[in-house]
Amino acid sequence: MKAFHHYNARSIDQALSLIKDHDGQARFIAGGTDLLGVLKDDILPRYPLAIINIKTIPGLDEIEEKKDGTITIGALSKLAHVAGSPVIQKHLPALVEAAQAVATPEIRNMGTIGGNLCQDTRCWYYRYPHQMGGRIQCFRKGKGPCLALKGDNRYHSIAGGKGCVAVCPSDTAIALVALDARIVIIGPQGEREIPIMDFYTNMGTILKPDEILKTIIIPPVLAESKQIFLKFTLRKPIDFAVVSVASLIKEEDGMCTDVRIALGAVAPTPVRAYSAEDMLRGNSIDTALAEEAAQQAVKGFKPLSMNAYKIEITKTLIKRSLVQ
Ligand SMILES: Cc1cc2nc3c(=O)[nH]c(=O)nc-3n(C[C@H](O)[C@H](O)[C@H](O)COP(=O)(O)OP(=O)(O)OC[C@H]3O[C@@H](n4cnc5c(N)ncnc54)[C@H](O)[C@@H]3O)c2cc1C
Image 1 (cartoon, helix red, strand yellow):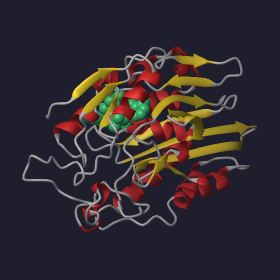
Image 2 (cartoon, protein in one colour; image 1 turned 90 degrees about the vertical axis):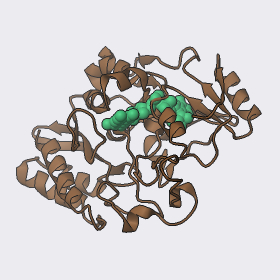
Image 3 (cartoon, protein in one colour; image 1 turned 90 degrees about the horizontal axis):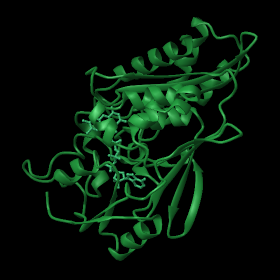
């Protein structure tokens, strides 16, 4: 790794002021489980001159249940803390399952939920270490075409992508999409709150380099709704999702009155299966309908040369999540 200055920010204001002082040549660090790998492999277009630690800002790691049932999660909450929180365990089992599905206990003890949402993509062309024979350039790095389009794309998008077909690697993002979460961002312009679906773009997130992801807000979950997060990986103990699905269903008198299905690792952003949801709403869910909905969810998906198998996995996970 190259040398950089390291600052422990004591407040959001101080963190924002430090990042401003470095004029785009600094980065925020939370648990460091993603950023340190990115720095070691030297994949950023410009190596940062300074790293600003935001874990040292008090109050950004709290999990709270409001009187109306809204749950807020500080972005600096460790993944292990999220998975083990009694409030999250009581109301948001899909998020518990997603947080527990991330990596290893060591990484969940270091990595934060905010860092999990902001982490860089895992595309093997983009992440190729600079020191192993020189930098591999690609569309995401700002030079040349996306190498996965004509290369080894077995883990890439099956639902398109503008220029780059790397998938969103975050597990917690998928559960949070099914839970209709909103996120609070703070920067030099002040604070703004947006739906989590609007956070992701084809090339990562809308977060500007001088902004901090502060809080995740989860609206009260529908009473008696059921939630699930399922993830298909190649290696069982530690691996990124080949495909993941988070579903939330509410039923009354055997009828589905509300449903949200979120798909992970199928596209550069999390995907909501809106047309499958429409098919389920107002009906009684059985295996046949779950299968039809799964079929509907992948309509229009366009696999690349090596990843049509992900369509089958997506359908199976959707069906399984609905039936379970
Ligand atoms: C071996 C391994 C296996 C993994 N497996 C999985 C997996 O199965 N599923 C999965 O979802 N993830 C997986 N991950 C990724 C892991 O979850 C992330 O590395 C971790 O969640 C990042 O959190 P962090 O706090 O360490 O972020 P950091 O590494 O500190 O930061 C990551 C990025 O986010 C930015 N950032 C962090 N927090 C904020 C904030 N609050 N505001 C603004 N910017 C911020 C940083 O600037 C940096 O660019 C794996 C990682 C490893 C190393």
